[in-house]
Length: 343
Image (tube, rainbow, N blue to C red; front, side, top):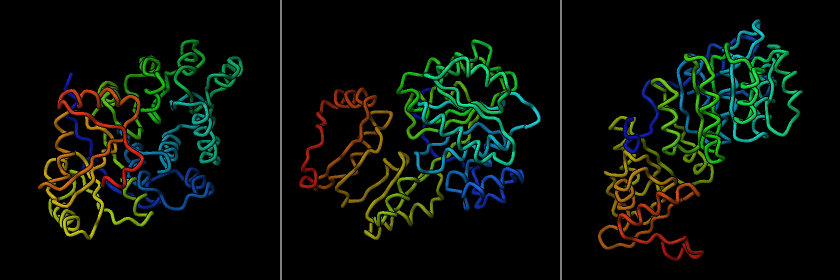
């Protein structure tokens, strides 16, 4: 098993941008549904991911809600269906019943002109009703892992025609303890099933899962944070490892000169940033290994200036935080209310 702590997550080089829905090679009845739904121009993730998914590639997309991620996989799923075949061809797993129902609604709306059958398979509803709907024949099933697995086990949800598995908000599914059920569902799917994973964060467990389920996946990272901060009138630059050296240098120049006051960057950059006046570092998520943590926060408070590092920590990150504290014999305090005075 390869060491996942060294994985750098960046967008794969072969990801190109398709600026309009018309140029994605989508079927006519689906395009009608997209425009009728009110979409005009694809969002950043839609411009990058839809084409890759339609091509049949396994895809990991790191994307938060509000980026158009649901429509990304809904459009892709609908494009890949054979409507003549009344069997389940795509399975979408989600962490909550509400999300599964929302996905079903988006699928039905976008597929309005395609005569698509789509069912939400969720806990807390009548099992008999589920079985009846599945027996009727559904092209796509969206659901929560527990109920979906139950339906597969009862042989009401037949998996033989499934071509695609979508894991939406994968990090949330793991947080809710669905790991076992996801693996159980996966075991019942045909070996060549295409896997699409969407997650706001990519903790170790997710990378472990992508290792087991995916073949040579395409990675897509959306600069969601940059967009949101620009909308709020911050001067922001962002960098990642796939950028050509020239572009990186000009972004660094912008940041050093103060033309841009905020730099958003992946770990590739944690090591080589040397900007004397940086006073604040924010770890949006904790790095996977201890050395990277020091590389990252070592960018602030240089040459005797004071520096502050703030870590955003979720419940399941506490373990990593404690490990960093122990390893460097340091104490990382909870953020005080008067944090502005410290900076």
